[in-house]
Length: 151
Image: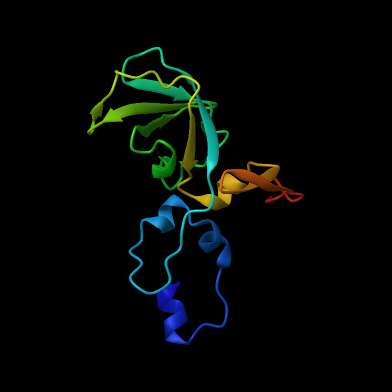
């Protein structure tokens, strides 16, 4: 987008992805003044820690699109401790990390993690509402009337 705007050739852009900044676009190198930040997250809870170094969260393929890769765990909410490594239908597998190695010293059962989807478009189509949060406080809930109507 920063190159498109600077060229002066375009009169229209696709703003949706830039508003959310999914994992795919977020990995691009942003060199200009425009620094877009992540704004789309999926709240997930760790529901099982039955194996050392592994955890199971409650967001899998039915809750996040993986066509642009697996989701990342937000650095602001445990991302330095977890890496999403596999998606099943309703659950995701997280590897617990400590200095890049599997960490079995702490039990994260019940901990909330925020996932960054790799591709926002098909992920957004899976949800009936968005919850707007600012500084940890819910400010709004937007119902998505067109949810699932992409056919």
